Image (tube, rainbow, N blue to C red; front, side, top):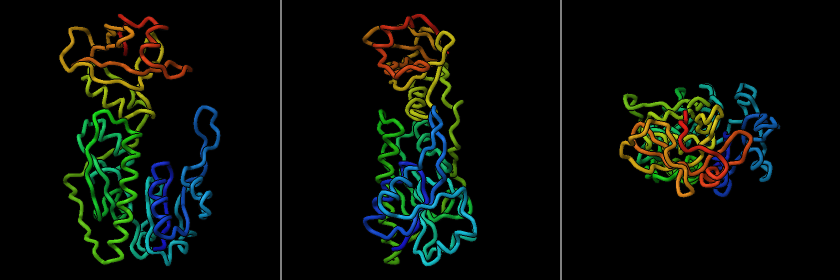
Length: 305
């Protein structure tokens, strides 16, 4: 099949690789280079780097407009994976099979840009990948293929996203095969079951130690590396980058109190249970293991938050 690809980040790469090996990618549409990180240097989208290294034309645009309409004619499908583009109604039917979207959730659950993070934030035991046909409403098109997977209790968002991206790449190929053989069976989404996963913001990472140790642990798993999870230590922001639930039993200590800071463990009382901090980071410092932090900072007896 001849397809166009719309995407941006690293999550898109397994799908590009799968399509490149089995179909013809006529071009890639992605966002312009944007400043990022502390130095605010221009950063190229991952799919641009991949496309140029494979000799595939790359178009960097702010939005899809009428000037691009002819590019989508005579294509079998448009493939959308982690793209920031809104595909306008007049373009949806230009490719023969329309636009197919890979979404890393069990739609209609977690429509929106942050489905993997919200699955972790809500302590879900399972998630999955949905391949849908794009419609004018966000993530609301008919489901073409859907698969469920278990979430490991120690899995952080980057690892889970990588696993779902590879699973979704295989599912895209299966979906295109079903279109080619005329065996596709779209299933409309149940609007009454729809939930949303909005864009993450920095404030989502503020840790409230009056919550349970399990909730805080899942927050850290969901929001690491970005926007990160933060608390306050002696007037300074302290980022917690890895943790685990030490106990689910209610602690006698006030929430936020670091009641044990030994080389063996760094324990913080929560509203319910005890959180063990494994890795953390002070401003302008490198991430460090908890045992090393305890050697350099007096933290036992302080109240975080």
